[in-house]
Structure formats: C-alpha cells, structure tokens
Length: 200
Image (tube, rainbow, N blue to C red; front, side, top):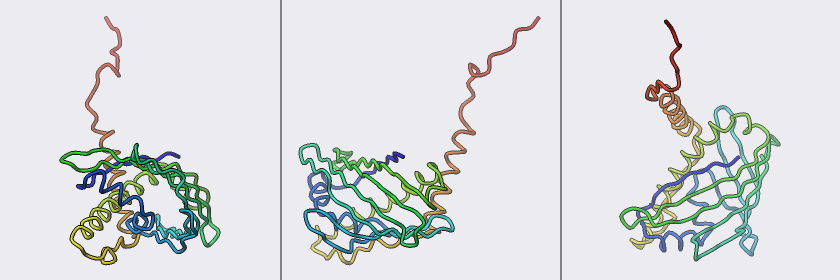
C-alpha cells in the first residue's frame, strides 16, 4: 500500500536537509515513536506506539537509512517491526524528497510503502491514509518547532512530539473521511453522465 503526503516547512531547503541528516532528530518529531538503540552504520532500534480505534498497537523493530542523495535531496528509510503482543507486523519504506516551497520555505514529499498484517490491516486504505495525513501534519509542526528552537539557541529536548493519541487522531481522521464523502456527494452535476432518453 502506497500512502503519499506532502507538507511545507517555513525553512530553506538546505536547513531542512541538514535536519534530516540526523535520524534521531527526525524520529523525535513523529508522535508515538522513540529510538531505543543506535546499532551503528545508520541502523537503529526503536518502538512506535499508535492507537487506531479500539486497538492499541505497540511495534518494536529496526530501521536503517537505505539511501541518502544530497544532490536530489532524497532520503530513503527502511523499517520493519512486530507488535509486542503478537497481533501483526509492518514493513515500511519511507522516501522523503525536499523541494523549494513558497516564500523561501521547503516542500517535503513523503511516500510510505506499507505492508501491514494483523490488527492494523483491518482498517483499510482509507483509514490508514487519513491517520497518516494527521501524523504527517503533527510531524511537520514538530519539525518546525525543533528547527526554530535550534535557531534560538534553545535545547530541542524541550520540544516534545507527544504521543499518538487515539482520540485526537481518530477525530481528525474521521473529519478527513467525512470531508472526502461530502466532496463526492456535492460534486457539480454533469449532464453528460446521465444521457437523456429518446422520446416522441
């Protein structure tokens, strides 16, 4: 399953790319994620806690930097993990590409190629896409806060990513789903889709 998101950060591309060089910095911006081990050679151990509806998932696994292309401003991260209660597994490849955004900022394009089994898979593409969108919005806000803290000479430890709250994410995801349904419902009427019948 391929899930794509994009967001903008009000910092220049070079500064955002510099921030992306540190996997611990990036992980610290994602709610519910924490690195627990630096295994060397850009391999890391960590955990991700996420609640989707009534199911609380606690994945433990490993991640490593598979590709880092400075010229293209492209970073590829491979990760895999298993739920600590044996309810499923996830394999994921995350590709982040930086582009010049509006007003001197940076547009971040993120593709997540997900393979999910077990409890999380029951929610389907729509729900997983909506939850991913909410997490990316929180990730963008946290990254902006951490970069700004560095500029002010403050400790980034004071900037917390928080937890992946099931209630907050669920409400936001339901709002996105409702908007998607309403957009389909209120599409402009197109007569060509309903050809008239011939008659005398």
